[in-house]
Amino acid sequence: MDSMPYPDTLTARAELCRSVILSAGELVLKGFQGEATRSFSMKGPQDFLTVTDAASEAHIRGAIAACFPDDSFLGEEGGGEIGERVWVVDPIDGTANFARGIPHFCISIAYVENGRTELGAIYNPALDELYFARRGEGATRNGLPIRVSETERFDAASIEMGWSTRVANDIYLDVVKNLLDMGTNVRRAGSGAMALAYVADGRSDAYLELHMNSWDCLAGLLLVSEAGGDVCPFLEIGSLEDGGPVLAAAGGVAKGVSEASSIPLAERQPSGGQRVASA
Image (cartoon, rainbow, N blue to C red; front, side, top):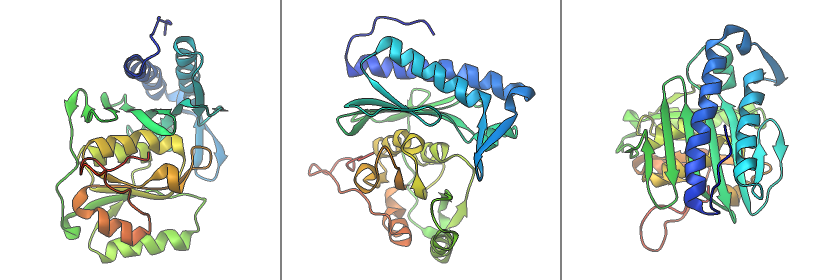
């Protein structure tokens, strides 16, 4: 991706965010379509790594550095530094799906300024679906506005729950039992970032994970908030460096899912608008 002169504005960063996630998507899709490049290694238990992960992150990191050299960068694979202006990137979320030829994975990019997520983008190149949000301007899929679902009955709700090795299995299973006892359908599809985008798009009614890294969730939490949903105050109960619990839900089921998981929801703004996306 060629560097271009970008003014030092949020609008310019939004333009770059859209551009670089699509170009990274081309790279990732080529890797997905090439059987050899989907070979993987293991970073830890159920923690997959492919050569395409590293290539995608390097591509995104290089483009941002060329256009906004004073911005900091935090990536899943290469780490980085956290400044007042930081891009938080997962080059492929759902690597286990990617490595096995399952087209349910994505690239996730968030831009955080002074402790608030201002931009969020999630792109599944296998389906050519780009989710994008800018704080205060709503959320879109391929340029069209999206909203969370209107589901209010738990026996009609489909909720996705992620699993983390950082949380004891018995705690995870207790929360699953709480949700099942409420009548919900609980599922897991292997990409937390994609799951959050699906909540924003009304395809799922809630997503929760007892521990999630910031690069997996910041973009998705902003998407859900801008799509009218309820989210946890992630950067109050967790951190960019160490992650934390995540909850995002349609308003009709948010309180019940919060109680079942013991993950709090952010307070509403005084104006009564979107919840404060401490994402």
